[in-house]
Length: 321
Image 1 (cartoon, helix red, strand yellow):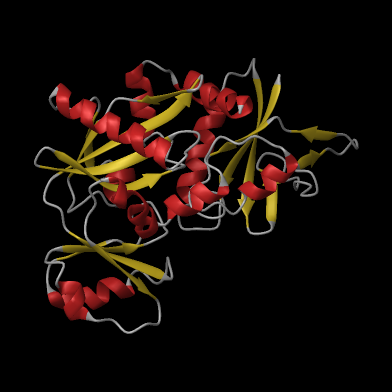
Image 2 (cartoon, helix red, strand yellow; image 1 turned 60 degrees about the vertical axis):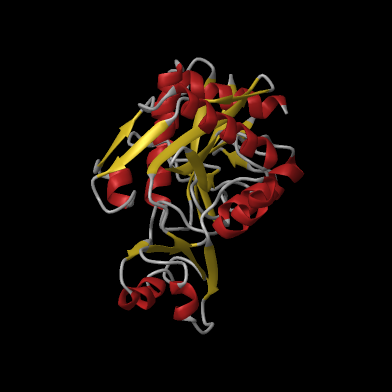
C-alpha cells in the first residue's frame, strides 16, 4: 500500500478547479493499492483536508496524534496555478527525494509563461501566433499592439483557466482588456487572432514511451474557450476529433515533439488552433484540469484507460524516474 499526497488548492484563482481535480483523483485511485490524502496548499498552510492536520514541512510528513508520522511515496499534482504549476514547489520535493507526477521546476516555470514557452519552441519550426508581452506599470503603445490586427486576444501571461482573458474587437476595447489582466498577473500577453478551429491533445510517458492520447476538438458556445465554456458546460468537446487521420497524426506528432522538446514529465495537455491544415501551438498545460468537466479525463477514457488506471500510470511513472 502506497501513501499518496494529492496536492490540491493553491493560491491562485484556479484554486476552485484544483479542489475539484483533487477530489476526482481521490475518488478514482484504487483503494487496494493507494492510501490517499488530499493536501490543501494555501499560502503557508499545508494541511490534510480530512483532518486539518498540518504537514511537517521539514520532511513533508503528516504527523498523527499518536506521535507516528505518515511518510508519502509520491505527490500527485492536482494543483493548478501557483505554487506548483509554476514550478515553485518542485525544488523542495527534489531535495527531499519525493517523486511527483508533473514537470520539474524549470520546465513548469517555462511552460507556465505563455510568451516565453512560445519563444522557446518557435525557433524549432513550431508555428505560433504573433504576440507582444506587456508588464504592469509600463506605458502602453496601442498603435504597436494594433499592428497585430483585430480582433486580438489579451490574457494573463502566467495564469490559466481563462481568468482575465478578453477577445478585443475594437481599438477602444484594448486598454480595458489590458486592465482586466492585472488582478491575475503582472504580465499581459497580447496575441494576434488566428482564424481556425481549436484542438487539444494530452501526452504522457508510459514505460518510457511518449504516448499521445486521442485529439479533442473544442467548439465553444461562447466567443472563445473561456471559463464558462471550460467549466460550465458551454462548449462541445469532441473526442476523438472528427478530422482526417492525417491531421490527427500531425497533431499527435507535434504534441510528442513538444513533450520531448520541453523535457516534460507527467501528463501535459497541448492546445492548438488549426489554421488551414497546420496546427499552431497556443500553450502547454503541465497540470491540466482533471475535474469531471475537463478534457484530459475524456482523452484518457477514449484511449481505453479508466481514470483509476490512468492516475495509477502517472504515479508509477513518477516513481520509476
